[in-house]
Amino acid sequence: MRVVKIIAEGFTTSFRYPHFMLGVQPTYEMPPPATLYGHIASALGQWFDPKGVQFALRFTYAKKVADVENTILLTPSTGQLAFNRKLPKILEGTVNPFKREILFFPRLTLYINRPEWETSFKHPRFAVCLGRSHDLVTYRSISIVELEPAKKYYLEHTLLPYEYSSYTAAGQSVLMPRFIDYNNKRYPSFDRYVVLHRRVHSHNFIYYEGQPELEPCWIDPTEPLVDEDSLGVVFLSWI
Image 1 (tube, rainbow, N blue to C red):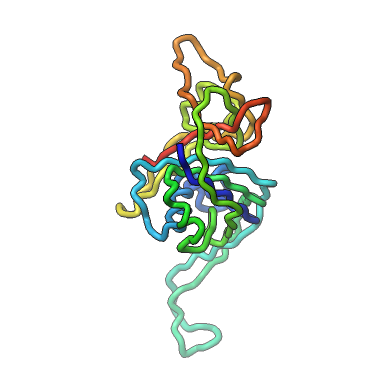
Image 2 (image 1 turned 120 degrees about the vertical axis):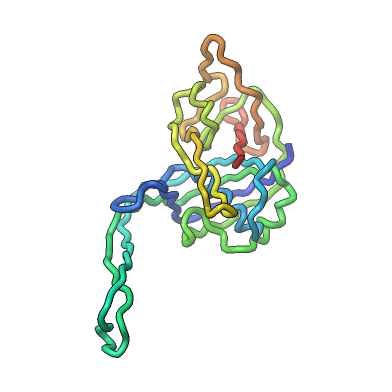
């Protein structure tokens, strides 16, 4: 399987839980698929049809900390501005502090089954960021890789389909935004995934009686071997 492999690094990032609005802003420990769709679209310079496009990732960070940020809630107001009594006051703001979780020194390895997009990542149309608009990242490497099928492999620091929760207890089940339909008033779609940080080898997967075996996985021959196993690459989609 021929794919484009992108390695990006930055100083900070944060992937906000969409259902937390006030008081605290926890972060996912893995970029949601919807975030990666926006990241790829910014490099291409346009929204793209997700049908048939698959992606896989490996994501690490050095440390997670909580920082204090402020938001200003605006409400209608009357009267005049304090510094100029001739100008009417239309809006008035209230400062609301909250805690936001931030991931320091993120590193993303992204695989996409569209090798023809290599040029777009080498010359991205918009600023390269991951997470918030000011979380800038740098592409350290952009290359074309030929993935190979294999039954023996290891997985770590990745996002997996929810079905993997039946084969290993090493990951954490999460509900993430899968896709945001910008053609339908930004309607969000959610899906369940497994966030896997620990290293798991395929021969350690648990199989119960009558449970089907997982399909052979793709491996990246350019990554280091661990106990004679290659790094597995599990693809996801936005559909």
